[in-house]
Image 1 (cartoon, rainbow, N blue to C red):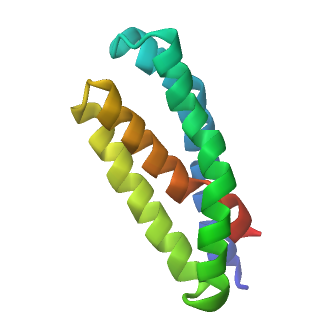
Image 2: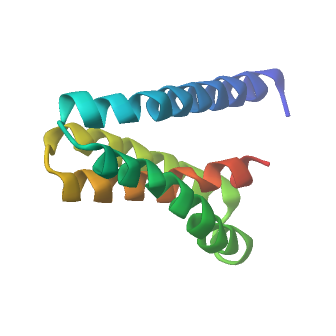
Length: 116
């Protein structure tokens, strides 16, 4: 791998993990203070990460092994994450926000396994 490719990939992964870490820590504040969700609703939205961490690697790693190259799957996951994150601010009720956070986590969680 040449130095330019290594630098681009390093910056990509750095930004990805910084954004994910920031998003995770601010999600509960966003749900509670901005959207006005209660503690149970906020907890359910945060639980989507755990459910997605269990389900998504099983499906998407199978696809990466059998159907599609890892690089393309990672690119499609990042595109889906971007699209879902751009939709979240347009919804204020619980069901769509829960669904969008679940879809976000389904596409984002396999990145840790795909990168390795």
